[in-house]
Length: 114
Length: 110
Image (cartoon, each protein chain N blue to C red):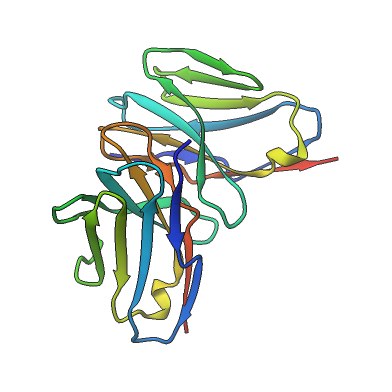
């Protein structure tokens, strides 16, 4: 199957700083990328959907100014958590899709905000 | 509304069959999915079923769909220790979104 990578795999930061997470599709062009958030022992919650070259569509309750998403190319999307706080600590997972095919998931990024 | 529910935990002995259940609410979902998540890893698609099917078998995996009751199940035959993971069902009410269940942690013991 197709491969999706995320970088970094884990990050620890101080409260108030911003953190950027990258999601890359390694062997296919991703017209759409999705960002999910997973709390410990809970399900994945879709945060936003991004299509290459256009603004992301955020789910209800997700602050777009806090979670900045950029999908500048067909192989790269970034999620920036701005002014991170301890409650933003979570496991962030991206997925990528070509057309309306299967979503392929990245391995996730664990964010810990001190 | 969109709500997908699963039991939280299942423990089985190696070699037995495991059955993981899921209920969903959106009858318009065209596809229903089962994903596997191993510790610290992303999700791996195990199998999926089209909404007009009742059953799908793929090697050790059998998916049963009761559309009337909005109930989906995943049966793993001859469960192995390597099957220990969290299993998520997901529905797809439109071509863009996946709505995930709460996840079932499967523990396989020798």
